[in-house]
Image (cartoon, rainbow, N blue to C red):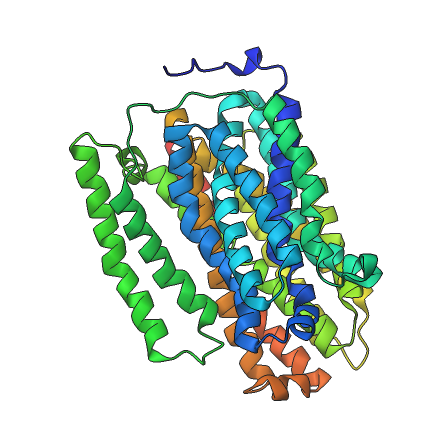
Length: 482
């Protein structure tokens, strides 16, 4: 029997449930970045090769990206609370396996398990929030989600650097994963008590062929972007990305066929024919291509180029989450309904911030003054905190509650694809400038690091400038029509 939908006003514990959902989301977000600062320690401890070390990060990202849409849809069919609890449990178990992994192969497999569990858990977060909160509350809620999203992007290196520096119980890198055990346990107990059982589509059946086609298409896109630079972009990377086009077309054809025949589809026809939703998903993809590559580049610029420790490097980026939190709080209260304006203002502010970052890098001499990056990073944070909540809210506002899981999963799948795309583009600008191989990078001069970083910042500048132009035109056209 389908559970009756719970009106938001009849769910007084929704704000407590929000805390649980944000905690779980934060655990997933920091896990993407926290491992980066631990890679040298992992290599020293396990004797991993460079390729194996790359897969410690890649296994998680690939499994996560492939699983987001299928598990988002499974939440609609089998129950969002159930999928969230399964995902949270699996993520906590995967973290434990990472922390006790005896060798690099086990660690890579455990990271893949973490990615699958994260993909099971994360789409349910936005889908549940979309259903249990009133329309007039969602601006504030998605403002908090935006804060956590941006904070997670930069908190990982700070937290990871601090944990490794303390070296708890002589465990070196392992506590960066083991810390998820108490956090996951607390979140699981709280979720069992606080999360509601929401309506699900009991007459729907899983779309197994659609899931397979989507997984292949995403893999053909994401895997070459992850591995391309490592292998100097061999022919198969371009062949794979080209092959993603017919596979993606076959996926769309199959989804339309399922919908026309009355069968449940992995991506419902209501989403495929929803121009507003699809255009916003494209904006999400482009938006999230602009920031992750910047932080990867900054970590190497600060540490390898100018000798900062992982902790010092992480602390240097603190102005960014400060700006995010301020903007998310203020905009969530003052401009709750001005979505297009907020996206435009956020993208324009990020364009200014990234330009300031580019100029600050160019002005760097033999000595790095990390304080000089505080203002540009703060401005970037203001832009991020202004745009993300509005972008998430306006995208999901076009999705019916019954399809919230699929809508959230698809949006976040393309968010991940955008992040990987941005990292690949920035890496292609940054690393070749440093040198043709790891030895050349290790011996590159500070002037070379400055040149490489300045070049790398051109992608986020262009990406956010394009976003600002597009959203500004869209806002103007809508205003003329209205």
